[in-house]
Image 1 (cartoon, rainbow, N blue to C red):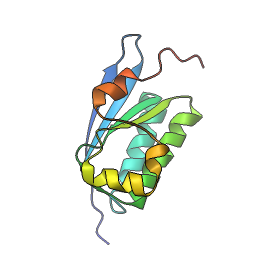
Image 2: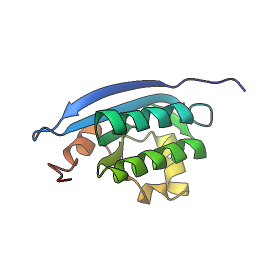
Image 3: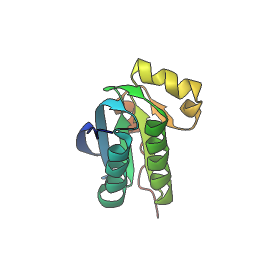
Image 4: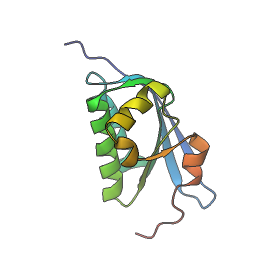
Length: 126
């Protein structure tokens, strides 16, 4: 099977109290052919850059169970290090998958990236 790559924009946001948040914006399909790369990027971001991650799904028009699994794994990684994991701007076509699988009740999902960033916990004591 051909390995596909997923295009992903990454930016860093610093909150008013100095908390660094990594914002990842994947583009295209988050499926069995690309979820592993996305999973690695999440792991790397959480372990090396910041315990706080926002995933902007506005450019992801298709997500399957592999994509959902990579998101759950990212959320668990952030939980382990007492970080935060938020999802925002879910594409309408992908939103249905979250609703049908009831994953919309598992994740913290925000309408906009700004709302997700505003809700990042301030000065968490470790």
